[in-house]
Image (cartoon, rainbow over all chains, first blue to last red; front, side):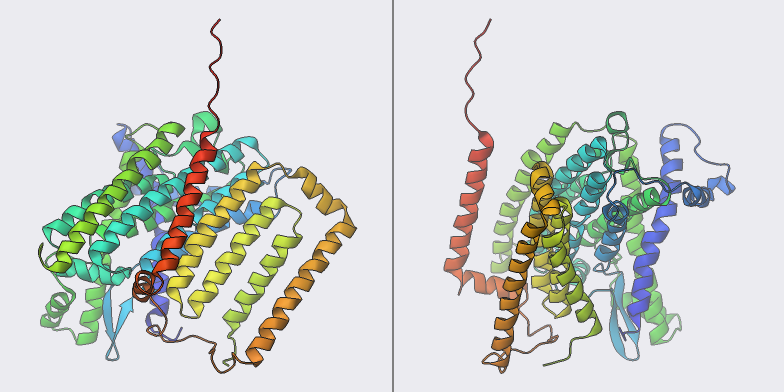
Length: 358
Length: 180
């Protein structure tokens, strides 16, 4: 609490998610329009950039309905859970290296624990409850169906993620997300890179399922279920679900960026060489470390932005999966692939520890 | 003993309130979700005490998987009769509440007696240094060396459970319907 970076880290976490929602709104609508050869919103400001503000104002002033038989506690609580869970998850992500304050090197990370990865997986597994509570409390059979579909999809793909994370943890040798980025800075051998390719793909595909994005958005399939588990939500409560979905996408992007693209690492530069760059420009040691942290944060944001754009790109490219195809993919394809890759990683790790495979 | 901080008080009160809600709520799904809350807050208390691995594992396994399973089961089962009995039959509900209080009271008394007795010199409350608490490395090293037998036995137990699930899910072989 008394750490000087505490409030900065909270600001980064909160700011990242809260800023992502309007940015993604305009990127999604203009991006999807571009992919579909139409224009998209361009009226509300230069290039339509004020469209998120117009949408937010509209949603605030919409009538806040609650259906007749809805549960008085669960109905408003469900979108709240959906928003809070990604904020908690993002706390464990390292946003930059260390910053020099008063002679101490402080990490730019809200929760610098040695089991950050496990904590992140644990918190994202709580997202299922927002969906279940929403579907159950809406007093609507379509909502309940959508919620049950969505939650079973989410827990299935959580398992695929868990098994792939085993390979990642074996390669890096630690559950600490900061240590993982440090290992990326140090460099990995070709065998370790090979062991990380399939987990990358599996976790990438599973992230689409975890966040209910197309091609896994059966729970929100408009032609089948009205709007699935958030049918009965209007106005600001729906905006909370919307924010929660983009926040979950941000968390998934941050996780993939940290585990597989090196997080805040800029290829070719280590933290010390980056800081030396700024010191050579004539800044003091403290200010150089702030600038270094800012550049590293920028690198992480670029990687997260890349993943978010791919989320949008895939949404408007692929058609939706049928439910049995979806479950088939999760249990019969991604899980065995993850386990087989874990087996291969065991072997590679054994030889690496013996010093044979570099 | 250290004084509990404000946050520890809040977490403890929330967890007790949620646990009471699990028992006294007439809506079964609400009970299951409050169970999730209790388990999550317990995990939060572990993290607050510095046991990061245990806390994360608690949230991942208990709140994130077992509680989800509970909620699924409650949603699938038809519990209208049980809910009606609980809501409308006051003497029966009161008896249940009394038994809860008796059980809780006995736990409280035994823990208090233990803490004022032989455990007083051995247990230290409050956060400890991160290095002092067993992290993933120490736990894994212990699992494959000192606690190997328990580890393998629990693996066998899980394997048996999975096999049981497969057998139950397959069901009986249906007879071929006669072709007309």
